[in-house]
Image (cartoon, rainbow, N blue to C red; front, side):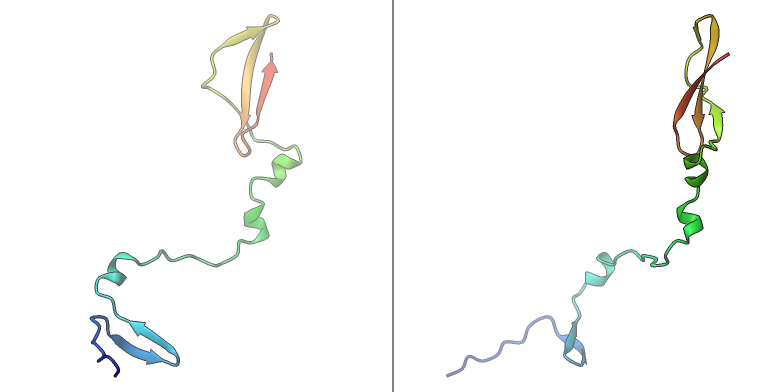
Length: 92
């Protein structure tokens, strides 16, 4: 003899072809994923801030966090590129 079927607490809400959607209480409120944008960046946006520095046109700014220093009787100034972050030392 076959065992009688026991009704489960989770019941299908609707049928879509061969896929069954199951309603689980409290699942959708706590497990929703974030919305991800699938738009691809344009070449201009991908290369922003890289092409000028790669070709030697840096945007130098004086690094004010470093202390005052003198080398070979000249003032030492540390400069940092604002786009790519490399440093350069200048003697004046």
